[in-house]
Image 1 (cartoon, rainbow, N blue to C red):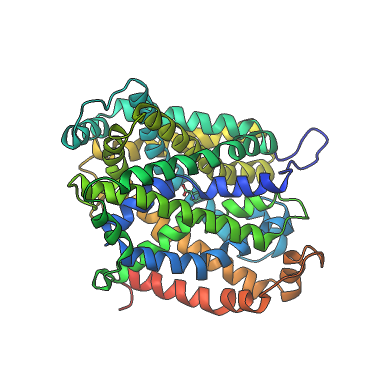
Image 2: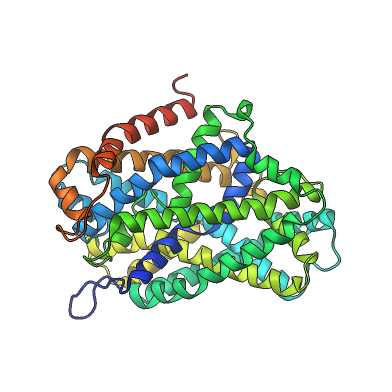
Length: 453
Ligand code: PHE
């Protein structure tokens, strides 16, 4: 709840709760579903290297900038920027964030719905006795079937809305902090199994041995998009979350810890997937269904595979929910604070609108297979619009705002909790957000969309 009955703004309580909530937003399908498939399509090792450098040099500074804006203004993304820069066009960043939130919710809930279906398949032991080929068929038949994926997508969106309604502190914090450590453990278990499959080493060299001939402007833009998507930056989700942080939160440490955790989970997901891909004689560029086709295979070759599979898909669904609530919260906080709606009304409107766009997305491989935008199906074009356009541009505007519109004193004041904590590397941060990040993002973006060569 943004405000309780006494008009006090709700917020996160403990330090661990903050890290858990921000990490809960960052860690999700982006790491475990999206990273492996995008890395697989973009050549593996070289992509990983570019992506990692972007997280360190561009991602962490953008995240920190979002924290500064959110906690200073204590408002939704649009309202926060407007309160710092009244009467300017800067709040347009907030509007872009709302658009991005709907676009991402639409395709995110498609994949989260697939994940829920895989919880169900694990539960009924539906992978048992199937080889790679028939697991591929099971996945493809499900993906194009229409009714089932839509059903699960709606279940997922309603689940997200229910958690949103139970309020920030009680809802988000409670769920995220208990469960994420388990996901990490499971992922480690999966890595061990995957690495000990015969032929696994080929997957490791695919992921860690960069082949620079695979790099081109489009690959670089996808690495930037993947970094932004996975860190939840560029659309105000973290502005919104930071508006619930208490004044004692050490913003720099939080940004650093969350980003590192996010990267570690992505790499582990890669280590769980690629050795298995090669061991099973599959192709790394299998696309959006990669983990759904590969992992059930790996589970079957593990002792206790039934439970591993079930626990994995349950935890992945939860990781997806803790991310999707941060996306939905961007819109809900905006509607509540800017239009004085009740939280219930705002959540309901957001849910219905997201479900509407989401339907088109889920039918991208079924009924709407023939509909393409710029050569991509609906799903791929929404994913591209969000990750390769809206998030990089959002990130660009956010660093420009904090670097050039806000004063150094304002920023330093916020980073140091009004002088309570020492701010290390302020000059480096300032230089990055003023010069390096804006120039780099602009060049990567224009180059990646083919505007400059
Ligand atoms: N970072 C989330 C994930 O990896 C997705 C997300 C994107 C969340 C943008 C919020 C904002 O799954």
